[in-house]
Length: 549
Ligand SMILES: Nc1nc2c(c(=O)[nH]1)N[C@H]1C(S)=C(S)[C@@H](COP(=O)(O)O)O[C@H]1N2
Ligand SMILES: [Mo]
Image (cartoon, rainbow, N blue to C red; front, top):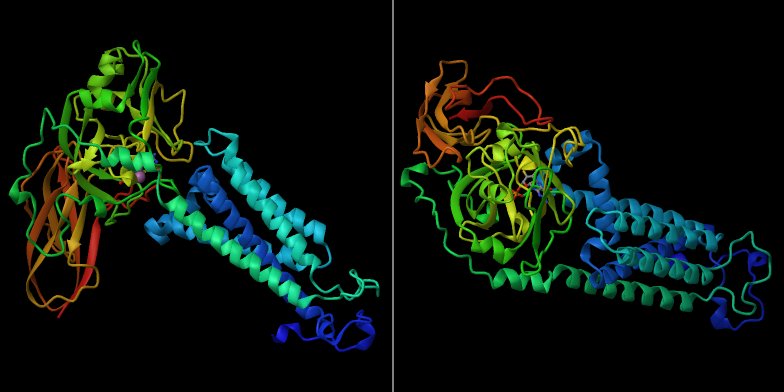
């Protein structure tokens, strides 16, 4: 261990009258103490996180400091940062955020460790302070209902602080200290330090791994409630998807998106796991003459309908992946609202906004008019023939054809409040996104991929187009600056789903740009005007550049 070399100048040695064995424990130099300080800082930080993780397993996974601080950061991130994160990291954005938090914590742990040899108390207090920050974040999360959420960070902070204090006490004394050793006759107990540090590292690793395993195992009751669930058949089943809705060209999206491939966009660092048997949905607010609280069984006893609906995210760039099409089964929200005495604004109802609230504190506001205008707005319980996956909102979520997810598709829903747009701004509206956001007509080239090198001759160009609740009536393709040519439309499933299309292109050698645009059933053609995703969804034409060989 080269770092432990003794400090040569004899006059600095404070070790007097000790055995030969202990002579090797003479004080190391300044640089070594700096390194040792950094090491114990990292150790203390690691221990704090590991203990917190283990404690979170006893409280709830969301109460862990990294998750809590990460959640707070997501809620407070400026829109530009969030936009950049989702553009740069896509659905890995949450992983990157958590790695970033860990990196920042590591830097602070290093700094506190370097401080520790000279200022033991202050350094330990610094670790405690981080515990306080974590505890504050955990208890102020919107889904936090108990003060116990502060425990993981508090316990972790104390563990880290104590460890830093103890290990710092075992370090060699600083050069500037008075000549007398702190522990007369002992000096720098190298072996004791190594043993203590190794034991702390091993214990932390054990606690951390155990905590991860326990936190990752999922909520047993929630998992069981999903496993035991058999969805009743729909009283109003969806017609079979027309065989010709799927274009048979390699590289085109699957017409029905399998659950495992369905895009996921939400703010949850830990996916909520809700026990369906304990789940309740409250419907209340302005103009709700008969407020109710429903259990999951209450919902299943109602008439279930099954519908194919394409869901798209407002954060989807032109040509982007945040669109998916699934067969949903659920309760018609409009019927349920009518049973509660809700009247849409067009018939004189006082509430124009329906605010859905999830177990993790997300709020999503939809126009009551849209939800009750006859479209199949659902409280969905099933997705592609199975109960909703946890990632997609188990046990119940909303789906409203024609509206972007952030204004319609609340996952893990537990509360519906009727109010007005004037009275309340939902989560994303507070963050500069539009109050109302109908889906914009869009089209995407799935194949060929950008920068593909197809051979001359017939090249199949194909993809999807969507204009939910209006329907797609036409898709056109343009090669370079040539004329627009009609693509062949695949069969339509419903006007609430996307529609596939294909175009047999006679490709000539060289570089070419393929561009697509769609026209919806109102006759409106997708605009060329490029806009950003903020505030109400990207617009513009999707182009792909290829080189024909
Ligand atoms: N509870 C909750 N529901 C949510 C969100 C969220 O962050 N939290 N995100 C919304 C957004 S922005 C979209 S696009 C859809 C995505 O649904 P999916 O993840 O099932 O594809 O969920 C919506 N519902
Ligand atoms: Mo979204």
